[in-house]
Amino acid sequence: MLLRYRKGLLLLIHGLWALPFALILRVIRPFFCVKIVRLKSSRIGHFVADSAIYFFGSRPLTRSAIYLYYYSRNEVSNRFWSIIVQRTLPCPNWLGPLYYYSRILPGNRFHHLPSSDTGSRDIAGVIQRSTSAIPFLACEDSKARAWLSSIGLESTDKFVCLQVRDSAFLNSDQLTRGYAWDYHSYRDSDISLYVEAAEWLADQGYWVFRMGKTVEHRFPSTHPMIVDYPFHPDRQDFLDIWLFANCHLCVSTGSGIDCVAMVYKVPQLYVNYLPLSHMHSWTNASHSFKILRWKHSGRILSMLDYLNYSYLRTSDYIEKGIEIHSLSSAQILHAVQERLLRINGLWVDTITDQKMHNRFNSLLYSHSAASSLHGYVHEEARVSTTWLRLVAPNFIHDL
Image 1 (cartoon, one colour):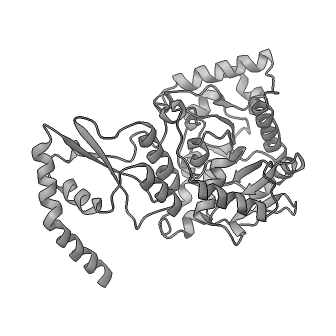
Image 2 (cartoon, rainbow, N blue to C red):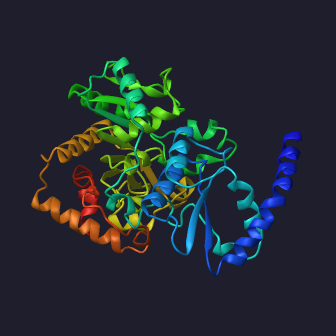
Image 3 (tube, rainbow, N blue to C red):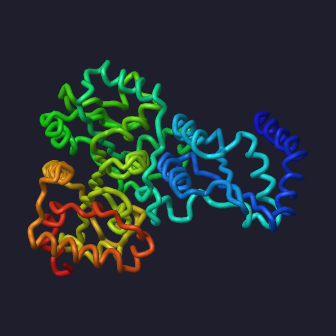
């Protein structure tokens, strides 16, 4: 209680300069407009994607406007990414009081922009179109390379980041706990299903980092080239970001932190991803979705049904009589093998495969549930061929 009163008192004191300044912004708006963007920093996926889109979208000082960026220093999902944001975007520490008082005055719509108006999706493709990058400092690269060397990686070794979503993080993190996150438990996945694919990657010479800040279970493998990073004593916010930015491949179920791989243009594979309509079309990503079956018949939903029932709540699938099934270990392995072959230029689609991909894309990008979610489409964005072949017997009448 005392802390809340102290914060309120500080805000009132800051109002002595912030309120007049906010009024001045209204006066000078016809000649020069100051726009303040509040970045959503409490969730790492939004924090990374939104700040990167603004950075690559080029909204600096112009002749008629200046863009400033604000995020709550008390609601930071990753401290190192906040350092990167402060290096790349104008986000002065004193902006908080000005943001608060400017928001409560009339005309705030002219001076304030949301963290994202596209759900953090890079619909315009500003990240992928850009030829620049958000750099790490030389000392940061050296620090990370030294750590990799300390655990056994040679300078020429390639590594893969594996991110499998469960409910542990959102239920335990101080910024997110206390909220009923089980509404999207349909996105969770059993980590044991990924052992076969991870060990296959390791046998091919790739180190595998099972990623995560807080997870439910340890990774059930003793392979010497698989690192259960959430339980490593050196886990830290800096390495969370650096590893995703520098891996050879990011395999993820779609959990937010994988946006770092997207920003740094690392090839991605999304497995057990839902809903289908939300696939990441603006980046170099393949997708193998969870299998949806009608409870009454056991049949896999058609392509149109996948799109028509693109639910974002577990309860909606249950009420509609749709069962959600994770891909098997073998199916995940096949998706990973296809992705690596594509990266190395060795995968070849058959004529039938090409027809299925063309029909899939035609239905996806024209469907009312998905068309507004997509704009710029990366040339390597696709559904995995191995997934299309898997669902083809019940999916084919739409293809």
